[in-house]
Image 1 (tube, rainbow, N blue to C red):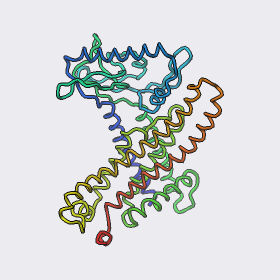
Image 2 (tube, rainbow, N blue to C red):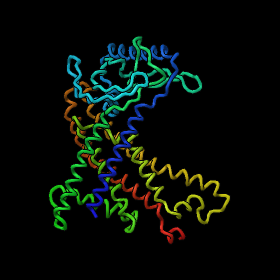
Image 3 (spheres, rainbow, N blue to C red):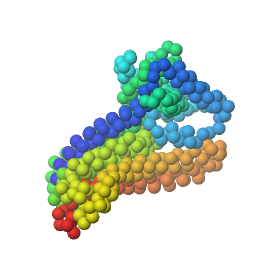
Image 4 (cartoon, one colour):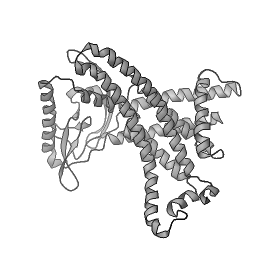
Length: 395
């Protein structure tokens, strides 16, 4: 049974990464289109903001902790390693994949457009721009980190931004995590096939307690002994998918450290999977409890039915926000403690800051396991609630 679960988890893992990647691509392309005759005004606003940021940086060299922290927490098109004393940036570039309806597909490395450079009319946006909404009104939109396409005169090309399918930090680390999990899953499955009923050892011996824990302490109590097996591949997938990203996000050097599970698009996709599986697994008793709760007067149905329908969405929404908020908060706290050294401009802050960072990292390791457990537990609970026993409903 365990070998079958691992094989199923391997399949679900590929679908999870595919849809998570799509959600990240959509997140990079969520700026609304604007009319062409406003391009000059838009570009002027963008350049004003950009130059304003540059002048502000020239006037003050004070350490901006919030800017540095947010830069490390959010997704980007490359890995920033360090900045030398002479202002030279050491980065690991990632592939940029764009589609423009005016100039077609473009593939190049993000170093081509890094730090204010332009390549084939593309450059990274800074600050905000003014765009026209459906009502013809100009509204301010942030283009920080988004890739813009400009013509020779510096105006935005066409009626919108190019579609961005780039391999960002989060996408790259998801691919890396998938590669690691594939190797681990296949290795463990091979060990089960080779050892049979013999005592597990090595990697199999390390992972089997976690697999058994998900099965006996999460799946069976919440879904039931007769129904849990078909959901084990999904539960194992989300548990290990979340766990490995939480742990890899705590490693502060390339190619780790990306805030994948602290990205709302990724947690949204995971919560969406739970929502779909829960509702497609729902039996007649589940839907009857939503649209015709037993024992409820008919007049109250006008209130209870909308509340129950809203509850279908609030459950995965809580899953999404809980994972996103906890992981992001942990990254921010650790980076804030490191920033104390630069904020006070004193080497004497290094020792207490380092002690606090190590302490917080120990807590974050616990949080990494805890958040994977909570997400998996609540997913199993929601699935189990969608398949209530007939006797239980009548009671």
